[in-house]
Amino acid sequence: MKVSESEVSAVQDAARLINEQISSFKNAYRTQDDLNIALMCCLKIATDYVRQQHQEDEIVNVASDKIDTIQAQLANLLNES
Image (cartoon, rainbow, N blue to C red; front, side, top):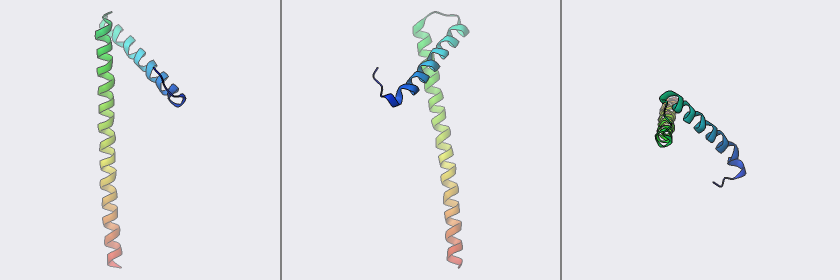
C-alpha cells in the first residue's frame, strides 16, 4: 500500500489499532478462524466510525441551531435600535 509521508503515522496507528482489535477478538472468542476475526474487526471499526460520524453531525446541528438563535436575537436587537 502506497501512502504519502504525511499519512505514514496515521496508517501505522490504524494498523496498530487493527492488530490490537484482532488480538482482542481472538482472545475473547478463542478462535483461530482469521476470516471471521477479520470480519468482526471490520464491522467493529466501521460501526465505531459511523457512530462517531453521527455524534459529530449532532454536534454540528446543535451548534448551527445555537448560531441561528444568536443571529436571530442579534437581528432583533439591531432592529429595536
